[in-house]
Image (cartoon, rainbow over the protein chains, first blue to last red):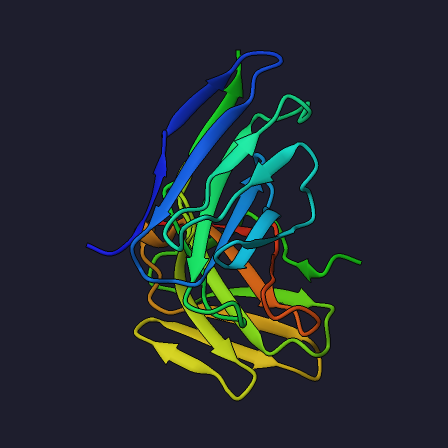
Length: 113
Length: 112
């Protein structure tokens, strides 16, 4: 089945630690996105990528990093510089970057130990 | 002013009635509009999208656009308890074709 796979489902971070969230898609989509959702809030864009080896900062990129070495994969690293990382992280993809519907993975819940 | 605004609710609607959800947006040039449903603890699921060329009906769902007043609406006919969820409105920015801005969602509750 085509879709977007995020792993792990739950992740715990210790103080000062970097953690990486995985996002893989087999939809052959060009564009991929990372969002953060806090309780009772909408989605805020962290980073997005329109094509392999290219990505742009979203509205809340500080404390996060990404890479896009393969079309299928767009991992997100939450660095120790992100002081309030506890949130629900959602990866999405769309066929082309141009105002197309975005489809989401199941998300990763990150908490601080 | 937020780029995409929704009433947070909760909106309570009796089973079988029509639920009407609204969303206003600030980017006058926006041409793509999306509605997502999100159950508690789950990721958003796309249920409808329309472009500036017209409204759309799909089963019990109808999405309507009022460009002059800059709002989009989602109507759910014959509301079912399974429709109880948070509905997120999202709008594509004219200034950046790659970005979609999400509202914070309206919580809908269908009472039996």
